Every structure is written in C-alpha cells, then in structure tokens.
Length: 340
Image (spheres, rainbow, N blue to C red):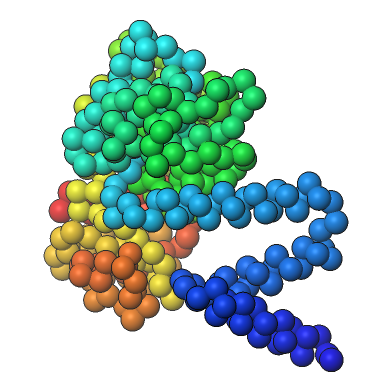
C-alpha cells in the first residue's frame, strides 16, 4: 500500500478505537493525538524523552478535566515565596488579598506549597482555592489548607504546571519571592506581550514601605527600557501597590466592561458587557489607529464561528483588524472600553 493508503487505514482503525471507547469530545483532535502518539514508536527512541511526552499529556489532561467545572468562574493566580512565614507582613497581605478576592466571587490558584501559596489558600479558603503542586524531593507535599481538597493537582514538570496557572487565570498577583517568582513574573509578561495568552491584569504587591517590586521596576526601566529592549508601552502591563484592597480593585475592574476576546477569521472580536456608542467607536478608531490593520473598530453581532459555550454569543461585541503586535496598546484599548 502507498503511504496515503497506510495513513487512511491507520486513521480508520483509530476512529474505530474511539468508537470502542464510546466517543466523546473533540474526536478529530483525539484522533490526531493518537496518531502522533503512535509515531513515537519510530520517532523517539530514548525512553526518557518518551516519558516526558507521556507524563506531560497525562498531567495536562487531568488539569483540564479538573478545571472544567469551574470554567465560568473568574480566577486569580497568586505567586510568591514559599519561604515567607506567617508572621511576615507579606504573608498577611496575601491572606487579605485572597480573602477579598473570594468575597468578590473570584477563585484563587496557588502553587499549593507553604509561604505565600499557603497564605493565598488560607485567605480564600479551600472551597474557593485550587492548588497546583510541584513534586520536589525536599518538600513533604501540599500545604494543609489544600492538601486534601479535590482541586489539588500534583505536577512533575514545571512547564505543565506553569501552563496550567496561566491557561486558567483571569489575573495574576505577585508577592515578593525568589527565582521561581521572578521566573513566573517574566514568563507571564512574555506571554501577554507576545499574545500567547489572553491579556489580564498583573498586580505586584509590596509590603508597606517595601521596595521589592519598585526595585524590580527600576531595573526594568534602567536596563530594558533604556536600552530599547522593550517598548515604553510595555510598562503598562503591571501595577505596583502595597494595599491588598487596591490590588483587588485593579484585578476586578479590568472586567468592569471588558469580558474576553478571540480571533475570528483574522479579526479580533472583543466581547463586552456594554456596547460602545457610535461616537465612542469613532474616537477609538482615531486614538488607536496605529494598531489597526484592515477593518476598523465596529460593533458586530456574534459570528457564525462563535457557537461554543465559551463564546458568550449573548454579549455585545466589537471587531477590527488587529496588527497582532501591539498588545500593550491593546491593553490600553481595553482600559478605555472599561470606562464606558
């Protein structure tokens, strides 16, 4: 048989296997995934490499399954040091931030460890918390707030864990921390700057009179911005505060009018709580002309492609040809929409 006939026969067998399993969601994608897995038999010889792929798929499958029932709930990920003790101001600030988020009906995601992570779970309570734990040889496991909760996930790999954090977050709050916290801060910034994740509010919380994040921002300004390694607009991706209540306001107000967005046939469709007026649309086209490539900003009905439960077809929306580069300016556009 030819290669095409071989592949057709393989695909047919995989479809029969899916039917044997009872079918389910996204059968076409599962079919492709099974085919890719079978290619490991010839393409990946090293067992350790194959184990990375197998473990990654298993961890991500379980994480998506666990988060699925809560897909319509807003969530904030809290990052910070595992070494922060409960007597520290930063710990109490994280408790208060998470408590206030839960009061606004926001759920909290943490790394499930001690320190700031435990503070976040403690403030929100286990009912409003998720834990994404990383298995490390020197840590005994998850913190006592989340260790017996069904919303705890244990990861082997940092990259699957970090993908889970960002994929399911509507906001990120960072408290002072070490290498891990810095890594999480810069990875979040990289993803929003490049459009590899949805734009979201990012708040950096210092203790009163503290300089941890202010010093971090000074470094960014003096070494990244001054040397033209980032754009001036990129400084708008985050807010620094020492007040947990102000941090919560920054997070929740991001969704005052803005709801979500997705690309449909090359255009950016933004869902809103309230549609802008014709005058407002005219002003938006003038003020943000630099990020428009193609169709101008205009009100539209839900497109035929927006038909899933997460497409919110009942909401008003605008659409335009976005240049897919100027995400910092897009963030500014969302800020303007939130003032309507």
